[in-house]
Amino acid sequence: MVETPEQEETETRQDESVLEDAGKKALTTERRARAAAEKQAKELRGRLDAIEAEKLSDQEKAIRFAEAATADAKAARAEAMRYKFAAKNGFSDEDAEIFLTGSDEETLTRQAERLTTLLSEVRQPAKSAKGLKSGVTGSNQGLDPKEAAAAAVRAFRNNPY
Image (cartoon, rainbow, N blue to C red; front, side):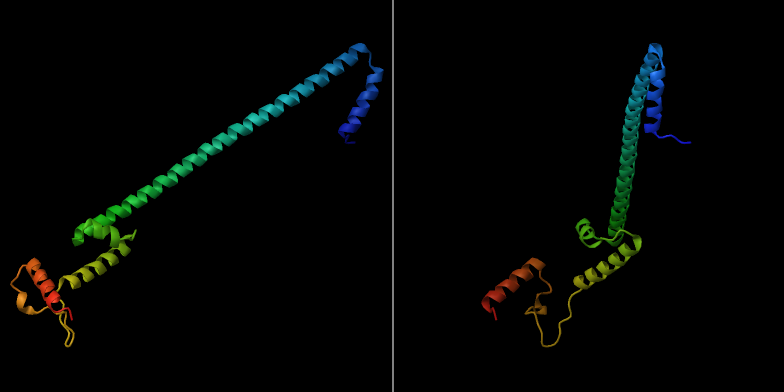
């Protein structure tokens, strides 16, 4: 038969009436020792839980540190690839920072090819379409670019329309 704590305590009290003074003292001493042992066990469980929580937080810190280091390494590799593509294609650092935003080689290759195409189109002289003229004529071809710009400004001031 399984006894509950209440039944056990009732039986103990009934047995106490049979015990003499020495038995009662021994029983009281045993109860106090048991209460002290339970209290000590509870304190030790609390300490153990605190140690495990501290250990877990140390593990979490290590995991976070490793994740941050991995992210930093990935960013550094992407930046190194960007500057590699910039140097390979003759882009300035500013152009590389603005236009080469990919983080993998395939994306950077496509961006670099497109930027190269756009820059070559800009660097080539525009072919004038019939009927549409910018107002600049081919007569200034021997001039320094600054002199040509100054001449264009003077021409605009004289005839703004």
